[in-house]
Structures are given as C-alpha cells and as structure tokens.
Length: 157
View 1: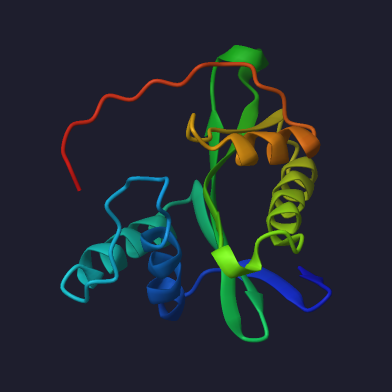
View 2: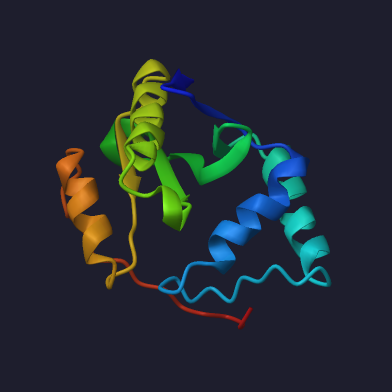
C-alpha cells in the first residue's frame, strides 16, 4: 500500500532492528524490549516463527526508506460467530517523532481493508489500559470498547 510516500509492506528480516527499536523506545509498553545486540538473535528467532506461520503476518510502514511504524496481524477462527474468522491486530507502533501524521491510521485502514477483502467477520485489537490517547485514536477509527482483557505472565522478558 502506498499513500503520500508511505508504503505498508510485509516485514523483511532486514527490518528487524528498526522494528525492535520502535518497541524499545516505548516507555509505556513495559515489554522489556531492547536494542542490545546480544538479544537480537531472540528477535530474529521470533521473526522467523512469524514468517513460517500461516496465520500471522508482520508488517512495516516505510517512509523515505525508513521504518516509521509496525503492526502484526493474526487470523483466528473460532466456533463462535458461526465459525467465522477474525483478524487480530497486535503490536501497533508508530515512531514517536512521526506520530500525528496519519501513519497509524493508514496502518489500521490497511488492516480493515485486508480483513474485508478476506471475508473476516470482525477485526479486533487490544490496547494497554494506560494508553488513553491510543484508545481515543482507535475509537475515532470506529473501534468500540467491548471486552476486558486479562493476562497471566509465565516469565519475565
């Protein structure tokens, strides 16, 4: 997808350091991400698992040759909703100095268009409870708060 110099494409292995840098710069997420080169093999391993999955796709938003955003989609099919499939959007991140330029909206519109084209019954995502600006952003795009999410941590990063 291209929009005013913005390209949204599937991530490639060469993008992994830039993607990790986006997450490492996130002060709210608290995921323990780091640009420490000793950890890079863990990220490359995760990238390979995503690439090999038939249900997951990792994307980047690129502008002027630089990665300015990222997100991941997963397709899940459940018995509810008459056995319909849903797209789950995860790990949405826009580079801090690029926020407010429509990059996040373009990434989400990309997902919505893809889900419609693939006949998904819905698109869903979760957002950290403290990301109030992100919640307003998703609501502006038409998402509705409908569920509470729960996590059970099994190990620290």
